[in-house]
Image (cartoon, rainbow, N blue to C red; front, side, top):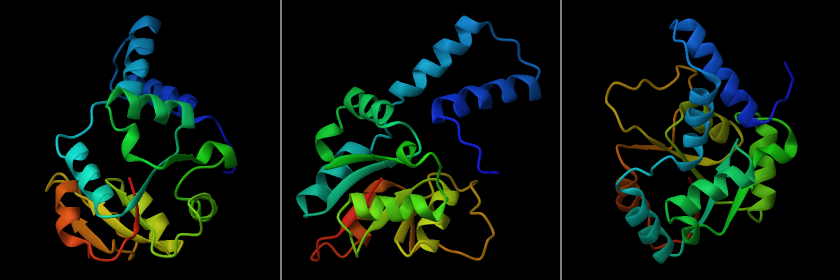
Length: 179
């Protein structure tokens, strides 16, 4: 469709859609509070320890998001995770979103043409986009109830938690790993 809106606009539109779909009436103030909470989402319990371990093993970590760099920086600062990442790479610069292959190519340039790059995500669409663009991927399947999209493209590996990634990666060879 090639129509771009900032990710925060898309998030607001998604909230509006859900309210209409489920017949939920929220005031403008309630919606604003919900949307502001998106900027301070808590990290899963295993994230900080896992990121620290990956970084200690020589992995270069980048936060890669459809959200604006400012919003991602805020979430990382709120969770005390910013120091784990080399940089934040936002799709907002390209005015398109994952899983557009251009986004992953942009990321690779921004991360320094990382040939051994891994994308780590709980979103199947993101894993599919990364694999399609030539990256390795780890799908973090935190629930047995979640189903991977049936496009015939599989993640390089699947883990139930980020802590499992530390165990499954060949930690003797530094790689660039992305969350």
